[in-house]
Amino acid sequence: MCETIEKKKVLSCIQPSGMLTLGNYLGALKNWKMMQEEFDCTFAVADLHAITVRQEPAKLRSQIYSTYALMLALGLNPEKSTLFIQSHVPEHSQLSWLLSCNTQFGEMSRMTQFKDKSAKHADNVNVGLFSYPVLMAADILLYKPDFVPVGADQKQHLEIARDIAERFNRLYGDVFTIPEPYIPKTGARVMSLQDPEKKMSKSDDNTNAWVAILDDRDTIIRKFKRAVTDSGSGVIMSDEKQGISNLITIYSAVTGKSVSETEKEFDGKGYGDFKLAVGEVVADELAPIREKYNELITDKSLLEKYFREGADKAEKVARKTYFKAMKKVGFVI
Ligand code: TYM
Image (tube, rainbow, N blue to C red; front, side, top):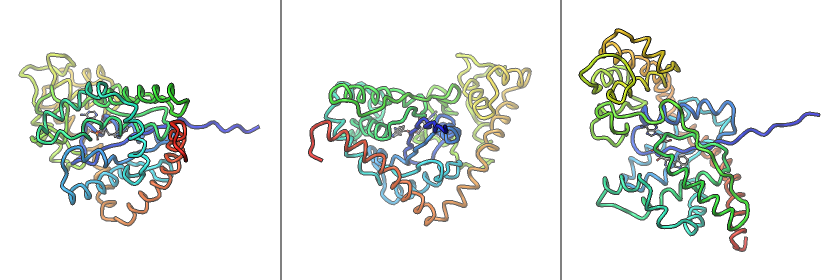
C-alpha cells in the first residue's frame, strides 16, 4: 500500500523595511532556501509590520516589490512554496485581534525589541509597535508550522507566540500547533562591521556597518576591508576579538567550514588577508542573487502574478485556522 508522508510545515516572514542585509541572509534567508527542498514552506513579506515605524508611502511600495523579488532571486520557488505579501491575506490582522484579547499587557512590556525600538523612535511610540509580537504570532499560528526559521533576535517573539498559542489552546480547545524556532548554529547573530557589539542592521546610519544582499562586489570587499577589528593578530574566535570572531562566523556560515577549519586555514595569516578572503566569499555567494534580482525587478507583472497566486494559496490555509479559532471563542460563523 502506498502511504503518503506529510511534509513538516515551515513559516517565516521578513520586513520590507530598507535594504536586506547579510544578517538577514545568514540568519534566515539562506535557511529558507535550504528548507524549501524538504518542507512544506510558506514565506511572506511582512509589510504590515513595517509601518510600526514611519514609512514614506512610495518607498514602502517599492520596497515591498523589491523584497518579494529578492525572495524569488534567492531561489525560492512559487511552485514549491507559498510566497505572498502579508497584507494581502486579511486573516493576519483579524487573528491578531483575537490573540490581542488573550495576551497580557505585562507580557508585551517585557519585549526587548519594543524597549530598543521605542528608545530609537521616541517621537512615535505607537500602539502597533507595542503589540507587534501579537501580529507576528498571528502570522505564524495561522499556518500551523512545525518550524520557524529566524535569527536569534526573533527568539523572544517566537517564545511569546508559543505562549499565546498554548494559552489559547488551553482556554478554548486545540486550534494552534506549537511552533519550534529554527535558529542556525552559525550566523544567527551577524554583528555590525563597524561596531561588533551591535547587531548588523539596515537601520544603522553608517553604511559601512552592514553589507546589503544587493551590494556590488567592490562595495562588499571594501566594507570587509574596513571592518573594525582589534589591534592584535591571529584569526582566532575569542570574546576579546569580537570583530574577528564576527568575520569568522560570517566566513564559516557562507562556506560551510567549521570555526576550527577556518582558524586552521588562516593560521599564520594577517587580518588584512583574512578580511579580503571573507569579502570575496561573501561577494561570490551574493553575486548570482543580485543578477537574478536585477532581471526580476523589471518584470512587475510576473511578480504580481506570483504574489497574487501566493496570497490565494495562503488565504485558503489562513481562513480555515481563523474560522476555527473564531468558532471556539464563541463567534457565530
Ligand atoms: P526582520 O525583517 O527584522 O528580519 C528578517 C530575518 O532576518 C533575521 N536577522 C538577522 N539574523 C542574523 N543576524 C542579523 N544581524 C540579523 N538581522 C535580522 C531576523 O532574525 C529574521 O529572521 N518580526 C520579524 C518578521 C516577522 C516574522 C513573522 C518572522 C514578521 N512575522 C513570523 C517569523 C515569523 C522581523 O522583524 O524580522
